[in-house]
Image (cartoon, rainbow, N blue to C red; front, side, top):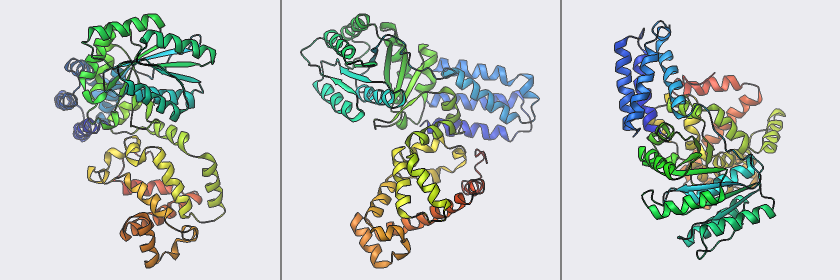
Length: 454
């Protein structure tokens, strides 16, 4: 996420870190590069100008000019101004109304609105322990109703059926009545995708909004449209009183212009980020964490939260006890670790959250391929139980059989066994209380890893 901007900002700060002290001249040079990085990331010009002016005023202050580590002081200022630009803190949904609290979802065609409805329902069900009903008021695209019904089943939300012959207002009123009967805490309403220049469609959603008076009105927008995302959100906000924005497809957005422009242009907070296609790929938007990622400092807090949500605690405790008793880490255990990594979106989804990854060469990062996780799981599944417990048994003929069973090559088996041995060594160090020692070793392997807190 936002890789291009992160790389450009890091390049500009590396030069100033090498300076003995900050001067008006090197501050000016650094800010010129920051300005170019932001413009290339498709951040709105007015936002770039205001941001760099604010950084310049603070950078020329006495505290920074006299600092013993001016590069770090400058980085701190940019980090704080980025957080301020994106909204200071996470703004959660305000659902403190008599149930059902209605969330109205609006957006352009193709912005990922229907999928976002399901993702939000899942998040509210699993993290907030809410009972959630979903309904489609999109009477122009019959497939949208079917799609939402399928997704509702996936996330365990209650689906309220609707029909293209009905009026959107009638659909939502009926859904609200049913949600009250079923004691649902939240009703999420999917609406038809529309163009902000389409007056008839905008009048329809305005009427719908005034009739149902939702607790939250969220605008769903594709982050890859850059500053256009912010301008579109502004146009929608003029027709519809928005309470927040959901930025989708951020996993494919290497620039980051929308995330940095939306708050200042619309005055509305980004409440969630869509970070993938799966129904669990929705994150609350924390400006401080995103700023940290943008500056290549990782996001350890989000990473820990994600691990806590996805790791099977029972299996983790069982493995810890097994290792403490001196029993070996086998391929059954390794497969469990790989499967849990897949549930978190794979290594590539975690990379920008790991502190120190900005110091890892791009050539190394580009070698990360999450398909390898699936291949390794397939190879382990192709083994016998005895081979999983005693990998030393796997000779040449067994390697051929395992590779054939998984539809892969013998060299894939060799690679798996090599990586498994490395994992075994790490687990052995952990079982002896050598976590700090192990992380220092990792630090050395990852190109000095200055961002690692070890």
